[in-house]
Image 1 (cartoon, one colour):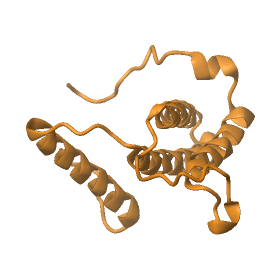
Image 2 (cartoon, rainbow, N blue to C red):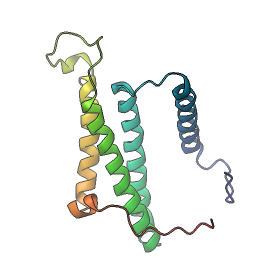
Image 3 (cartoon, rainbow, N blue to C red):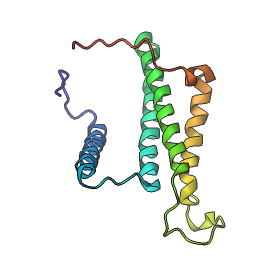
Length: 156
């Protein structure tokens, strides 16, 4: 798929992140044909980090777009909400995954060992920060509304 818009070098990191996701998807697709390996907790943690970073980006884009282009701002706000829903689903899946066998037998929390706290809590800290932003900007009914009435402006 090619873009009709000039690309230039305006967003190199965003393009690199998208390329990384495409590469990862191709790798998983290629491996799925030979041996299907389910996602694990570290994989879901990294995916959640990516989704919450996109969530923050869409939040800022929606805020800056809303005043000059209200209709576009509303669509970006909807995308922001839907992205939070995706991150919430990945967060829930993370907690349903079994803990790896190589996990230490010491189950006590030792946050002094890592500056960001225990690894299992980093996804929760990140998710709580996203929840804080979402609760300031959306209503519970917005979070529970299914995506409907979506119109596309692309030719089929």
